[in-house]
Picture 1 (cartoon, rainbow, N blue to C red):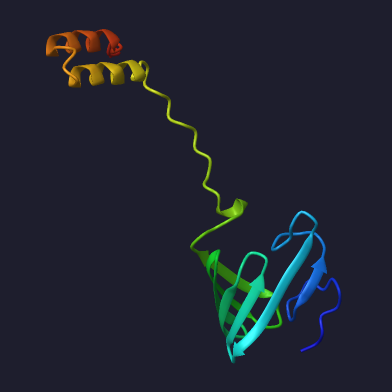
Picture 2: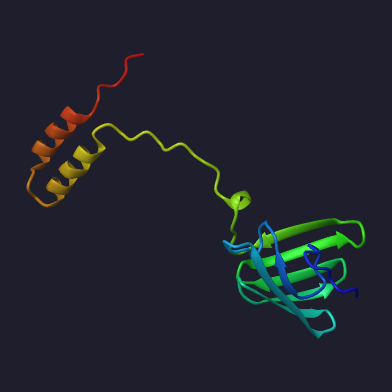
Amino acid sequence: MRAAAPGDSRGGGAGFRSGRGGGDTGPVGLRFFRRMTIAPGVRMNLSRSGPSLSFGVRGAHVTVGSRGVRRTVGVPGTGLFYTSTTGHHTGAHTAQHFRAPKPAEPNADLVAKLTDLHRAGLLSDAEYAAKRAALDPPAPSP
């Protein structure tokens, strides 16, 4: 394995790198990453975001860490790979899609108050029905 040049963005070693981008950058853009081989096919990774363990061979590995489980399969030497992540996700690509809020039922808060008063015994059934009927909008005619 060759020694990584300063600022080299490829893995393959340990050290400090300065630059911009995601990963373990802080407000200053300084990264820390250290990878140690524990046994053939088993590596421990240390970074600012916490430790993780990687299992596998060249072209296919599984990484377990604080951000969940990441499975990566690729064709060595081509730069083609597929990664899937389960567990704790971060980032824009894993955010929930925006959904417009449902329009609130008119007088929903008043209906809730009436229901509370009726359950507490402060309104009789007849009083509750009359007040509820006054709040409900008339049904649309066909």
